[in-house]
Image (tube, rainbow, N blue to C red; front, side, top):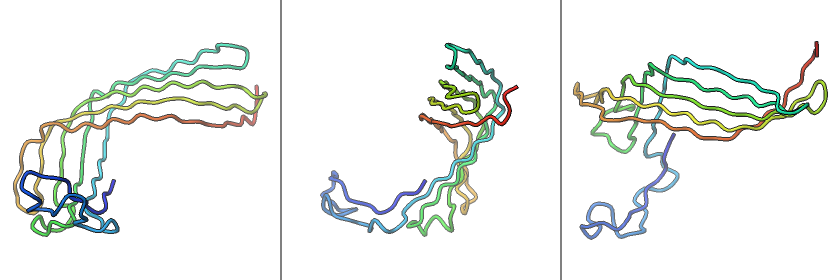
Length: 160
């Protein structure tokens, strides 16, 4: 995920650091920061499928992540004092869970359409590595939450 540009907010020091409220400190075409989080985890769970009506099926999925590993690369492009990017790396182990539900409708013997919702959560503690300073500090809390809806269309080549 990247952020571009910076607009000054009202502050307690009369704009001494950024400028007057609303002024543009960095043009919005300039990449300011980038954050790349990579999670790897052990996923233990179950899936349930239930036919609700003749052509309507529910599918549910729930999983526990007892071991989740995080590597996060944080790049501050306008901070040359932090060194080349990525300038900060966070890493640690934690836990999480994932939930998903979907309704599917059999349009005919071969075609199926579906729609669903999913929620993913993971958290960790660990260390913050100031890459170019050979210095580390505690990572107090790092969480990722994802919520979304999805749809799909499926075709079965054989209906036996």
